[in-house]
Structure formats: C-alpha cells, structure tokens
Image (cartoon, rainbow, N blue to C red; front, top):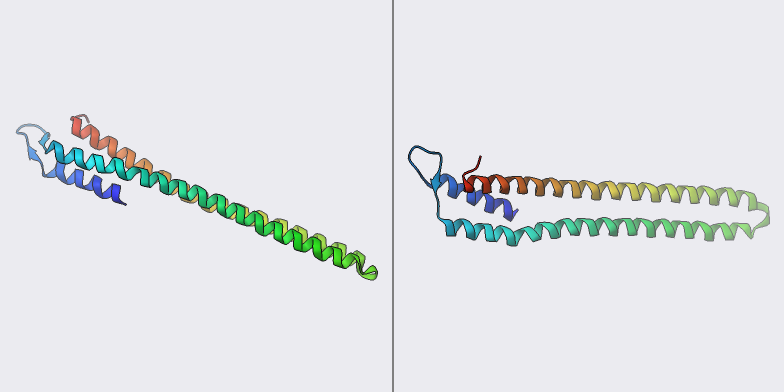
Length: 148
C-alpha cells in the first residue's frame, strides 16, 4: 500500500530530523514533508476507488447469484410443464418441481448470503485500513504541530 509507505517516509524524516536541545522537538525539511503529504493526498483516492470496486464487486456477485437463481427457477418451471403433460406422473412431477424450486431458492439464498458476507468482510477490512491510515495521519499531523 503506497500510502503506508509514504507515512513510513514521514516517520523516517521525523526520526532523522535534527533534535532541538532540551526538548522533544525536531527540525525537518518542510518542503520534503509537504511533498510527501501531497503524494498521500493523491494516493488516497486510489484507496477509496478500491473500496468502491469492492462495493461494485459485491453488487456484481449478488446480481450473478440472482441470475443463477432465476435460471434454476426457469429450468424447474420448464421441467414441471413437461411433467404435467404426462398424465400418469402429474402428481410426482408437481412434488419434484416444488423440491427443485425450494432447492433453487435455498441455493440462491445461500449464494446471496455468502456473497454479502464476503463483500462485507472486504469492506470491513478496507474500512479498518482507512481508519488506521486516518489515525496515523492525525497522529503525524499532531506531532508535526508539536501537539501530543
């Protein structure tokens, strides 16, 4: 992650800065730090784009799961119509069709739940990463301003 690398650079600059006697303050190159902060601002949208991609991927997975469920339901309905045409097995055909529909609905539900959980986990991980970045940035800004 580029943003984390840039934050590491800021830490290195602060740690390598010239210490002021009798204080915990250090002198650093202002332009160098501002350049790195500028790069972080440029890179952060990429992190946000990644979160958006995860959201879009979740939607795609859900749509695909719904499409699969619809296909299974259509196949079950088609099979049911074929079986109804045969008089002697009409009752068994209806029972089997209902089993297929129930199974298709259960499969669709499982796929939908699994994909939502997967997408939620990805979003949560990205959110945690962004929280850590924001906290680290806030701490670094406080340090740069001499606030603890």
